Length: 352
Image (tube, rainbow, N blue to C red; front, side, top):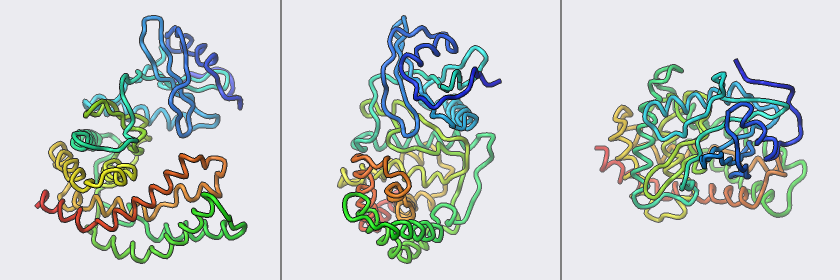
């Protein structure tokens, strides 16, 4: 049964509130609770207990779908049982993964020591380490009870028609009050360029296999959710609830992250190393689909309206960091398209 006391409130929790919940629901007596790394939607803390152990405490926003959060944590536990480096989640005495009291809902996991996110990009031995880890992850999650892998049309992975509709709606909203400067003006101009480029994107995607595999995957395997320690993967964090998506999409999303593509001129070589390690860890995915990794990565970026849409949907969320990320995504799309033939020829040498 879900652990819950009281009703949710609108006031954001602070360290004192979190410190009071830990002994109540997790039998952790905190010596100190500090602000942790910022989350996209959550507020995070790091608690040190009286024995010197450290715990990562995730505080969910008011109105969060806590059942979905539990399913996401359960998926991480499933991967951990398969030998993946996923931090152990602390359950309440009642066995719950999420505890809620007086308007605050939290989950607690072991803190990953001496690790950094992959936001600095991949290099050296990290390429192969990430490819091998993602291969093991997909091999494990292919056995998840949510259902076996299946094939779907390419449009379910890169939806050009849907992208056109989303871009047209976005441009209509921009037209009501055209921005004149800053990120909103750039987003407006870039959205128009993306719409004009969609016929070329559709032609590019015709080079993909007739169908692509989908299965249970991590769901949000972005650079902030991949922790590295030296040349090795330290942890995978922040899973999404189980859902079928393309493993090719997920592999490309992490090994061809815009920050990596822009920072590493030799990214095609690194990508080949990552995919070789992936294939050794999970040989089930057809070679033709692995060959499609850079094309799917480029198609996905071309069909995405994020974070361009934030300029009108959530203007307060447009921080300098988000604006820089948006520009990096657009620049990485151009780089992927420009060097697509080179990358595919290198992959062809590996896979055939």
